[in-house]
Structure formats: structure tokens, C-alpha cells
Length: 119
Image (cartoon, rainbow, N blue to C red):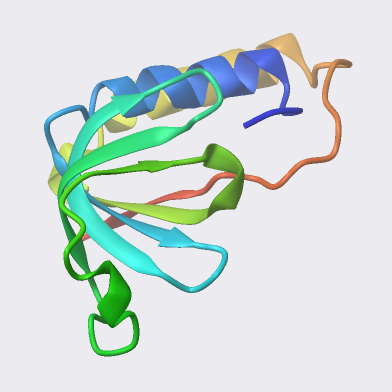
């Protein structure tokens, strides 16, 4: 995401890179929810999904033929990942490091990305 503190963005980016090849769900700010296999993620948390399925195909029939997509990080509301895929030690270490380093002065206002784990 543009505008987030460099360290926080790096930590999210590193975490999401560990999920490449895994099934995730992405909810966009326009209420579209997609599931698919994470193919790639970049430093702006732009995401490329393969084997895409629309969660509510009745509401968004125009998206039902889509098999692959690129999602700009700034339009993502939530990323949902399976609980079994969460490396809690990695996240705890990143949080400790961020707390130790303190808030970055390079942070500007932008939409936050949120990762949630589902059972």
C-alpha cells in the first residue's frame, strides 16, 4: 500500500509472500469478494490471483467468467487466509520488531490492509 510506513509494508509483504500458492479470499472496498490462489504480491500489496471464483456470483454475474486477476492493493478491504497458514511466530516477531523500532516518521494516511485468519 502506498503511504504506509516502509517497515510495516515490508513486514506485510514478507508475510504475504509466504502465502504464495495458497488459497485466500479477498474482499474489495466495492463489496466484491473473491477467492483464489495467491500467485504474487508486490511491495504495494498488489495481489495477483489465479483460479478465481466470485463469492457472490448471483450479485456479480459479470465476474463469473474471470479466472485470473490483478488487484490493486489500495482497493483491498480484507484478506482472509486459512488459520493453518498463519505463521504466528513470524507475525509476533514482526510486531515485536516494529514495537522496538517505534513508529516510523515516514508514515502518511492511507487505507490499511488487514489480514484475518479463518478456521
